[in-house]
Length: 420
Ligand code: EPZ
Image (cartoon, rainbow, N blue to C red; front, top):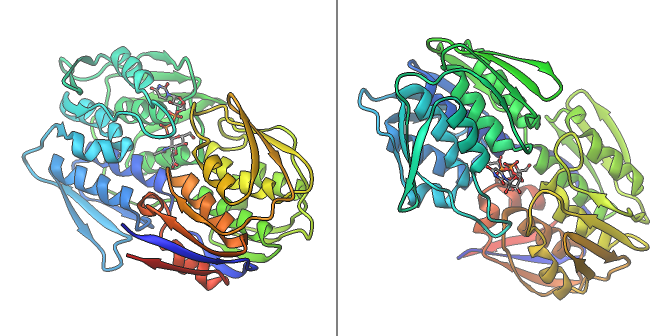
């Protein structure tokens, strides 16, 4: 298993380009099942989860042709479609559940593995199943598989999500595109990745529009047209690099990312003392000499502070002067990085879903274990400012969602190398 060796401390400075967003590309790829004709998807990040989704689509009957740099795919379909999404694929990449809505609305049938939980939580899919049931899905669960079907096409209806869910919103939007009649979805998640999915589907002729802040109206159509679409840049990668610049008192020019998308995160970084200038698709950020603390940072649904940056901000607040706290309100177990940060010298107290962080930490290098995707990148950030040489094990977690991260970090001054 690959590991990283990181020698700290160092100052990050220079320029980076942000890759395509994994969490935008995954639902977009799943929804290509809806299309009869060829679809081209551009700006794909070269990360493990995308490979897994591509393999899942191939197993369902999609024909995939990659460009040389593997950032562009052209997708067409075999005559014979399969409806079986295996445990081996869905277990390693939970977003596989997003093909359920697409298979149902296109082929009226799907046998798909329940995704199962992961380290950050149980990750149930009840909101997905409840919403698809309202559209007409019949299902039962046998040996860990959802056996789903519909008599004829799905039927548009009014649905209100009892809790805001990114995946359930995506699955239901996809399913509603080819349903009979009109579907109204209330209490939708509105993450930028969902807007990207909507823009992609509309580029193929889907009839989707917001009729309220979190309310969508979707008019089912017969079929979607061939289209070509470029996936948005990754806001979590952007936030991660902004934190890296602040953490090391360095400065970064971040290219090809629309700063309007991360207004909340940028205002928080200004609060801790960062100097930030923005242009249309650029962010210039320089970290403060002294990092100010943040009392009671809370993770919430977009447009609030995102759970996917919680671990990264925790490392930053370990270096702040004074005490800070972070409340994780989205996932029930997303503090896996805390034990590892303590091994680097952090003083963090956990009470239920709240972390109390004493600042002014002098991180000292150590051997570390990655757990989930975002916790792993937080360990890399901490190792960058720790004194000495740290080893970070099981970096396959990182490879799931960060493209070429060691080369990008090396380019801006980090002493990092991968060993197999
Ligand atoms: C998406 O996961 C992202 N994954 C996650 O990013 C992200 O952390 C999360 O949204 C929140 O922003 C992808 O986009 C592939 P949810 P998702 O449905 O859709 C509970 C990363 O690091 N819930 O909004 O699974 C759920 O357990 C990943 O890139 C139910 O109870 O998130 C969680 O506590 C990690 N029942 C909360 O709701 C359901 O049916 C929010 O989950 C669905 C969700």
